[in-house]
Length: 369
Image 1 (cartoon, helix red, strand yellow):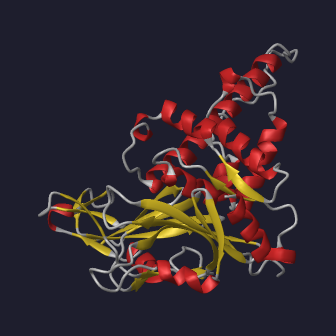
Image 2: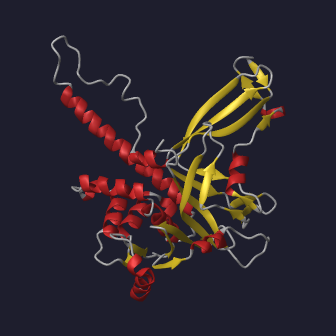
Image 3: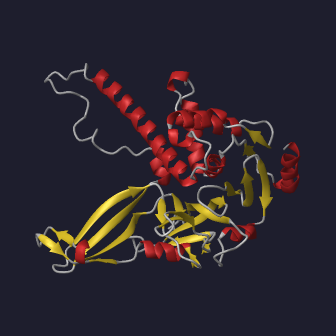
């Protein structure tokens, strides 16, 4: 392992980024699903920086307060504060906490990396929201004793406490989708907004992320049993429905639905379809006319022919270099190697390494204007 580390240092040479650390993560039996996602999140720089900032301002963690957020912050701090530039770290505390908190991840069976990412981000949001509410109620209870002479309270609870809290996890990953339904009788458009932390998209053979996103936003006609209840017509009507991105997130996480339930087989099957994901992505299915532009910085790859077994690795872009993380091992790869993870053009292929979760960071194109 030390040899692999020194090999990476030799490969980067003088180009080794100042202050950066490239550490593999030890696998505890079946924790590659966790390691691959943690590496992608670690190299999501805005997220990492905000997590480290959170850690430094909340250093007085006691064991009683330990949760997934403190364990993750502790792990990231451990990596950044290493004296060596490369090596291996055991994310033992984090994995123990994860298993303690959620029985899904307790077994030694193959786990789903997307399920883990989803659970982790939602759990971090819950912890931050609880902390914020606790701080708010402390402030309110202290200010409630400070009464203004005419009996009015200084704390502005009305209206404010109901507002959804926007945490730094939201600021990085949250986008807004709008679901537009147009009644074909009266032409009234009903729009419903919903937030997302990642987009799960259906895939097709020999396609691209751009075409899959277009399908995600394509117009669907609601008729027969699927008719829409129009409030204006006060009855069920035929309608057209489509999903658009109202607010693109800073970090766009795209989950390719590679595991599909096949009725005839009575089980899930892995779709090894070739889906091209570009290094630079333009989001065109947004409500605003301007395209949102993104740059790829991490890919979680599923290795294996089926959904119930296999392995996860990750590809990460750091300071214009691409790195390959496979549990304890870290090596440099050429940018052109990324395309070997698009998938297979044929149904049966010896290549079983397929891009599963894509991480894109928004590029501010017109920020100068």
